Image 1 (cartoon, rainbow, N blue to C red):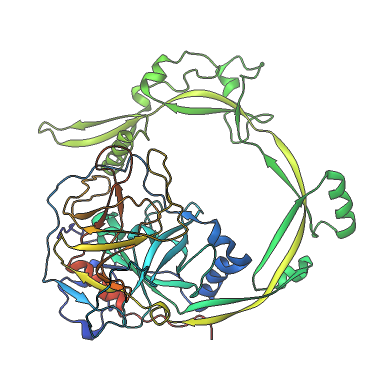
Image 2 (cartoon, helix red, strand yellow; image 1 turned 60 degrees about the vertical axis):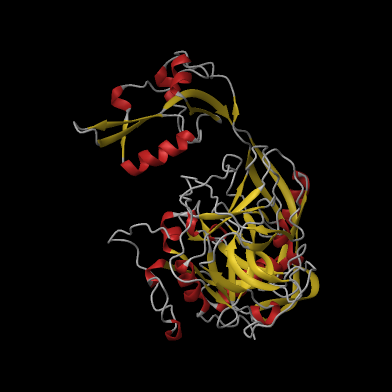
Length: 534
């Protein structure tokens, strides 16, 4: 068990989340971080509608989660490893509360698995893998923390988060389940510690959409309609636009927009002969579309750059006066970025007589770039469609598809079956997964972990498996029954690793589920969510 010291002035934590019948949890509730998602039924219905409309177009447009890149696909190595912090424990799956023996050698996919869909801080539609899991109100989803909390967006919860069990090519056979409240470990929520890269999300009752009748309507009817609707655009000429506006007015379906092209590097304007003249172009808009910009380069590239006003000439001299003082936190962040090739500047620190760092600085280097963007008018006519259908209650998640059990503080070396929807290519570009159908891996877990300083990983467990991104968040099921399609969630896929150095993923890893994981799970497993419609 690893704990990170929490400052006395830290964030206020969720309280009152544990039911009275759950006394005896090994760790304090301060391990639990909880954040609201869809705050009420109206918001939840609009989120479900966002994913359901146009016959699941948004679902089909989503791509696999991609927080890992080729530099993150590391080689496994032995570290200090996990440590069980309490006695092992299990919670039975839904339907298996009274355990019965079974024997089967068939590999059947569990009904509980599916995809979680969300919109990240960049506005991208993404998905991960997940499963329904046992809970008091049969309304809980288990997945990876990075599939719930946006690590690129200051650990806010993902937008428009839903779970679709049994998802297949835009279809939601059991309904769409909108996230209501997210639970994870405080250390992941605050510190992005990937040893705690797991999350449990309560979801509202599922919602199913009756597609009903599609109708073409005018713009006023389209604007007034509150159900699923969409616009189709057709490019037209300037003359057609003028004729259309004269008939329908500027508020009608005929539209135009000024489109500015991406900046292209051009030569220095002929009339620019002095630095003062050049600086007049260094504005947000430039002059006649031409702008002087500063392109960051390394210190060496800057020193090799010539003087003058042309492209690639030095922009700002690396004088002592131009260095910037920064905080220790920014210094450490930039050091990590520099190691990854994401920061080209120079970093240094002042030290006292005892060798302790007391002040931190950065220096960045730039060369001149003259760029120009062109603007053109685009014209189109819009056609408006609505779908007059209705939403229906699909019931509780656990009643619809069941729910896996939960296990914690288990020893490594046990067989697990891992499920997920891998889709990403391997680092060498080989793409043998599509993300359309779920895949599985089977084997014994190992205590070898990925010692990634950037992800603060020290206690992961690993499994030999070639699944790639898209499978992240998928369950690691202990004691999986092929006939009942049930087991015990004892991990979630977090990282993807290359053990033999051939640029192919051959191992995946999961946070070790210990007593603190159980505390987070129990907090989530006792929270009611309710219906969206009906």
